[in-house]
Image (cartoon, rainbow, N blue to C red):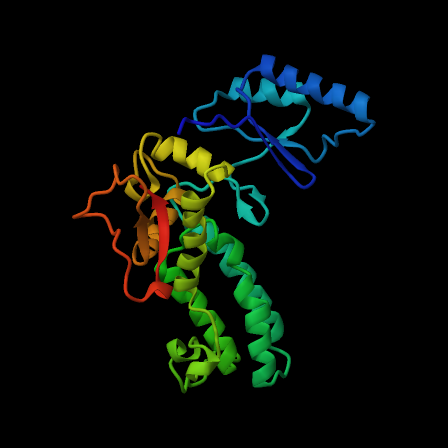
Length: 284
């Protein structure tokens, strides 16, 4: 799997272009956009267009590119689809965005008189859906998942004026399915791993995916996903996917082809007796 060079990304009505921080390339981009405007009749709104730079870019180059394009420069903490565009060593940037949004939503509900059924619907339909997108991209810290649980739990038990009420049942029991005596609330930590596990599964089943091609080319260009390591300076996203891979390994089995890449004493290739609890991974 070779390294894929990404020059642009298109999502809905948004476009992201990746170029070198030079006046020459900025002029080329500006010329292409003008040609597009002339051919399509659609005009680019440069007031809503921004440019950001990687670390180490000289200030002179930043000013030259921004002036050439006629756009404003933004910092790394600018958000796109509700998440910061760049995540450094600190995960608090992502965590604070989710916590603030969830807290604001629940505080707006505290003044209303909801029944237990109403609280259940609000928690499942709104509160627990707020971190879903972020959890499908990043592995959030365990202590932060516990903080989210605490916020939702206080709302469920009817905390008011900063004072919590007695939780008569452990939250872990409320997270059980209703058929098992619970209410079906989400365990944020397990839900996070499940969403990232779906991303990890794509590395085994969808080799044409852009995410698989980009991350695969960087972290295991000459190997397989199941044997990949963190590598040098791994991204926040890659760390989360590798942690979720451990969940896949609990049930994955290697499907035997010619057997050349299968280590019979080390690889999990023998199907379990309970076939419904396991699935096949990449063939040998």
